Length: 507
Image (tube, rainbow, N blue to C red):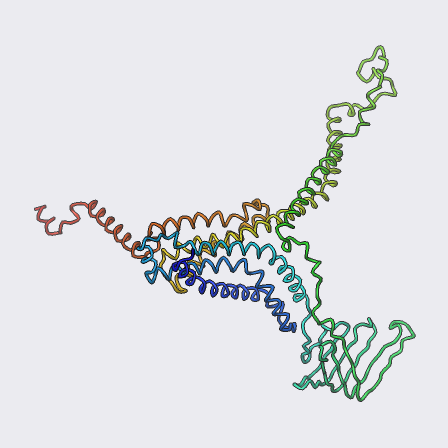
């Protein structure tokens, strides 16, 4: 049954949580545009496309904004209650901290479950749409921007130059080169012109006055080349601007990447990748055995060999053999046999290396894909668990600090979130470089922060003065007094005797 105390806590939490969540999301969106602003400026992106980009981007940043928002809002909530002595009054009424934290713990658990569902079903779609839209925007050609005295070559097959451009789209000394004809020169030059863009921004129309059109027909390097010059008082030239519009990439180009999959699809990919790796290993073992085994024909010649008749009166070992069977001494000497074996071994090792290099590259690629797939699978779980873990840090921390507002809570929230962010990124990097297994790398932040949360809860239950500056000030004064007494006790007796007393004693 929900009591008034629970309603009080929930009301104190909802406002800061909503505010900090959207503020955090806004900051993360600004960070993205700060990194990619150079790829978007000057491309004439319309408002609808930018809103779509912000929508997809916001969805992809929710898993990162939610833990920070719940950490900051929990510190602010319990800090405000502690600063106004409401927390003291509640404890004096016999209500423990854990009971006081119960409603927000339930809310944090629900948010953690919702975060997992969001990561599993919404994030893959948002990543897919975000990836394709971002690719299209980065590869989009800049918007039409004709500058004075500079050739504009963004429109395919044309190069345009004007000496002066007025505000009402009136141009002076217009030159248009057609570059689609290869080495042949096709040029339009006019003293004056008017430039208009169609309403759908698909075509660019030039109305030129008092000029010439130079055209070259035929093979430029042959004898049948015609040079044509046409004068005109008014000439219209229409250029196609479809190359400057935003091209839509099909979502199917990225739909099979691990970032675009749910946990069920990732599990299937893990099974298929493990089977592929097993097949790679068994196939490589068979191929390697085939390379490293020496050919059987080298030994079969010795099976049915009959001993040659022994000559009488032989003085050396070679004289015992028939003339047709004599071989060079180096062929049967230990050094010669050893060199033959080494040469054949090196040759077979080279064959084996050439046969394994190609499959080993495929094997390493599959292993990397498996690591990234497992990393994404565990990341969906750890980022949702992080909501609950950071709440277990923020709630007791706020009750210990007893400071509300956006001053002290923001400092502590930033410190712990930076720790979480760095540990999470270190874990990802170690997994990508095959330093840690995906399970260890992705659960690294949780394994470090969860004991810290338990420690803070223990301190909050015992009314610890962990962050009370007066406690540390009193402890510092006590240590200083202790050091002073120790120094006074170890000081020599003559150190307290005056100079006059010392002279009198000598007399």
